[in-house]
Amino acid sequence: MNSYIDAVKAEFKDGKTAVLAVIFTVARLIYGWSWFQSGFEKATSGWLNFAGGHATKQISAMAINMLPPKAHGFDPLYINKLWSWVAVHIFNGMPGITDFLVPICEMAVGVLMILGLKVLWGALLGLFLNVQFIAAGSANNFGYIWTNIIVMNFAKYFELIGVSGYLNYKKGHLGTSDKNVAA
Image 1 (tube, rainbow, N blue to C red):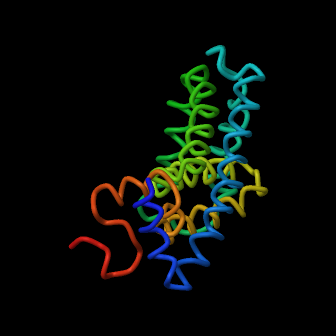
Image 2 (cartoon, one colour):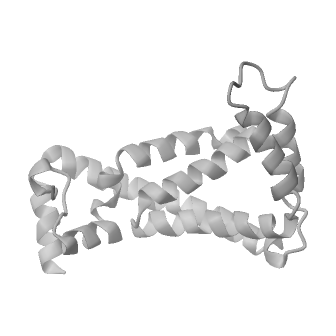
C-alpha cells in the first residue's frame, strides 16, 4: 500500500494532476453519496417490492414528451419513437422490475463513485438514468448530466485516488502522465 501512495505522490509532482485529482476525488465522494442516498431512499420507501407503480407515471410522461407535438425537430433515426416504444412496452410492461432496477442502479452509481471504481461506467449509467429523468420532465437533473460528462472526460483524475487507481497501480499503469501510461 505504501508503494501505491508513493506512486500517487509521484503523480502529484505535476501540479495540474495534484489539483484535479484532489478536487475531483472530493467531488466524486459527494456526487457518489448523493446517488447512493437517492437510491437508498427509494429502496427503503417500497420500491423494491416488485409491485410496481412508482415509476409508471414518470415513464409515461417521458414517452409523451419524446413524441410530437412535445418533441420538436427532425429525428432521422426515429430514436425518440423507438425509445418511447421501449419505455411504454418494456419499462411500463414490467413495472415491478423497473421499480426494482431504478434504486439498485442509483445505488450502484453511488458505490462506484464513492469507491473510485470504474467511474466511467458509473457515469454512463448515471447519464442513462438522468436522460430518462429529464425526458420525463425533471429538470433538476441538468447538473447531474454535466457532472456525468465531466466525470467521463476526466475519469483518470477522478479514479487516481480510488480503487481503480490502486488496481491500475497493481497492473503497472498508474498515472495520468504519458510517461506512466502503458502502451
